[in-house]
Image 1 (cartoon, one colour):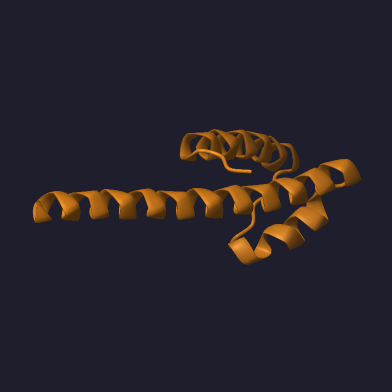
Image 2 (image 1 turned 45 degrees about the vertical axis):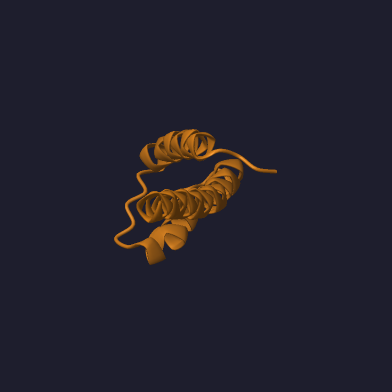
Length: 88
């Protein structure tokens, strides 16, 4: 399965919006990225919301890394095209 950079960004926006709802609902206020899971575990008292929080965390990471890799690939293709133009 391959998705475009734009699609990855849209999915990240959806994930972020849903994650923000959970953050507001449970007052999640981790001081660092390393505290996110322990804070969520302590404050989210609904098991389904906790599972969804974890799913969103994983999905966000996957889509974020994919978008970063795709962006780097696109940037490299632009650099290659520019270099080829200069050679000709």
